[in-house]
Image (cartoon, rainbow, N blue to C red; front, side, top):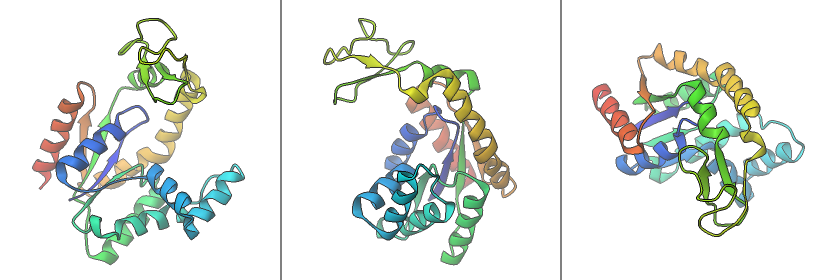
Length: 217
């Protein structure tokens, strides 16, 4: 099964991608992991991406597309994959279609995780991270620490990431609406999109996604 997962920041794409990929026994291919792997391994595409990033510039689509193509050609992706964060714009979506056509395969579905904008802001702006290395994450509403500003696990200081403020989150949402949302219409015209309400418990959202995939196949 070959799936694209889309949705605004804060919709829970990373969590759902991990669970769905495990459930469906297909690799989870995320843009972040592609960049880290290629840069860490010093591949030509990774070095090219790093040169742009070090200069504070956006990595061109063709570099991201090249990384994604290489990953989808790996043996573990022969029977399917779940794409998370790619494609992120129409150019990448069309390049993906061309690549899949060259390979003689097609997408099975596009899962659109739907979350109200105010909930996205609440989810992200309420996050608090521990400054220590444990990676503990809290939320002022959904998972508050026992003592404000203090990690329950290690006593470390909790902080809000600079790009998690409400202003920055709304800016990120504007970018999503402008760049990524058009691919939903693009895939809807192909009859591939299933809209998944992403409010509720993780397992509930996962079950909705799996049921949608069953209906499409």
